[in-house]
Image 1: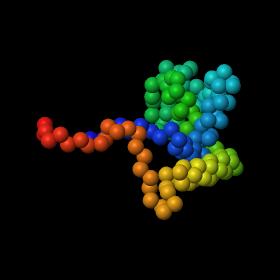
Image 2 (image 1 turned 90 degrees about the vertical axis):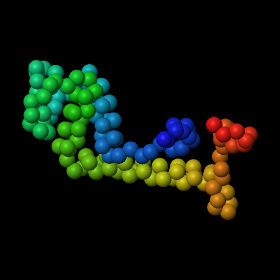
Image 3 (image 1 turned 45 degrees about the vertical axis):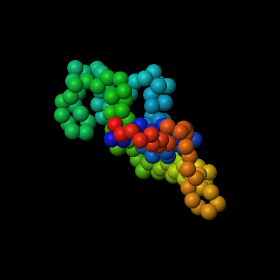
Image 4 (image 1 turned 180 degrees about the vertical axis):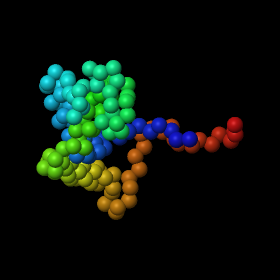
Length: 135
C-alpha cells in the first residue's frame, strides 16, 4: 500500500497545454461577459428542458455550472481555426521551456558535484530502532 507523501513545495509546476491556455482565456472572457455562453451552433442548454449533445447528438439533461462551462469550451476548442490553435500552442511551448529550465535548476539542487543524489530526510521517524521485540 502506498502512503501519501508530502509534495515538495519547491518543485516547479507542470507546464500547461494549449487547451489549458485556451480554457483559461475562454473562462476569463465568459466571466467578463456576465457568465453566459452558448454551445456553438445551438441555444444555451440552460434555456431548454433538455438539450442535444453537440458531440454525440443524443438528448441529454441540462448542464449547470462548471459542467456547462467545460462542455461549451471543449466544443468551441474543437471548432477553432488553425491560427488560434497555433497561438495557444506557442504559449504551451513557451511554458514547457520554462518548466524544463526550472526542473533542471530544481534537480541540480539535489545533486552533489560527483553526480550522486543527496538524500533529503524530513524527520527521523523512518530510522529503524531494533529493540529486539517483534510484533
